[in-house]
Image (cartoon, rainbow, N blue to C red):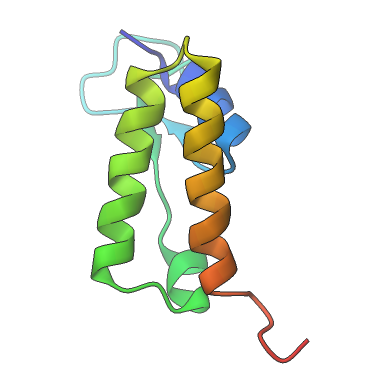
Length: 93
C-alpha cells in the first residue's frame, strides 16, 4: 500500500516524473494522496508510440512492486534511460 507521495519519489529515483494526485473519495491528505498522475505530453513530444507508453506503464508497476529492491530499481532505471535515448528531445543537437 503505497501513497502517491511515496510513489512520486520512488519513480523519480528511476527517472520517471509523475505527480501525486488525489483520487475520487480520497481519504488521505492532498499533500500525501492515494494516486499519481502520469502526463503524456513529454512522451508524445519525443515521439513515443502506444507500445512505448505501454512499456512505461509496465516500468511504473515494476518500480512500485520492487520498491525495496535496489538491484531491480537500477535495472528499471537503465531500461528507462534506453527508452529515452531512442527518442532524444532535440535529435538535431
